[in-house]
Image (cartoon, rainbow, N blue to C red; front, side, top):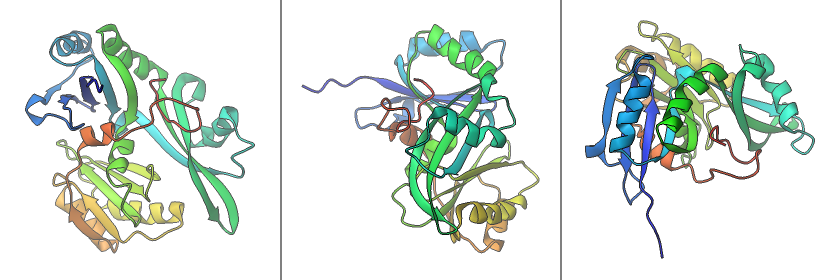
Length: 268
């Protein structure tokens, strides 16, 4: 017999927190969604109030401003463990890894400059932030089954697309999160600040060099500034409007636990 376990999905943004209950279909119930600003002084009390109104079992998505998302290549998968991955990402993170919480997974194999490479994806969070945010959720009684990066949740929505894509999700404060994907986790990410939308074109060039492929299409949420869309078009991309459901992206994560190299989950 199938027993449905009620769940909630929480998006911890730069200045807001969003929460919604997940229905039996695996999709969030829109009528249950709540969004509110948060402040460090009132965060714990607010989370306790949420726990009264929403299911304890939850999936937590962290805004890209709070994390570092890194995709790197390694010569051999077989010869690489967590310490090897740490050596590979250390120079890509402006933090001491001992002061962070991080996890990784293998993305697959490919070829760069004629050489076979194994690609990994790592997500890194400052330990102090992790403890100050995740700690109150657990103290309030939330059972966190996964902790995801915003870019990872977005990438899952488009993993069946058969071409490399630039994705853009706009925020109410004018920021735009850009990421590049190619049927898998995010390859590169960048937050474009309000007033600097022209940098979207530079991101496309950077993403192409990093991925070793050309990007010809972009999907942007309706809240992406028109200037950013124009910059993407000037970079040679066909831009289409799509809405990014972070709730659906979080719930699309099917592997939560298992071998470290196969599952990226900061909740473990």
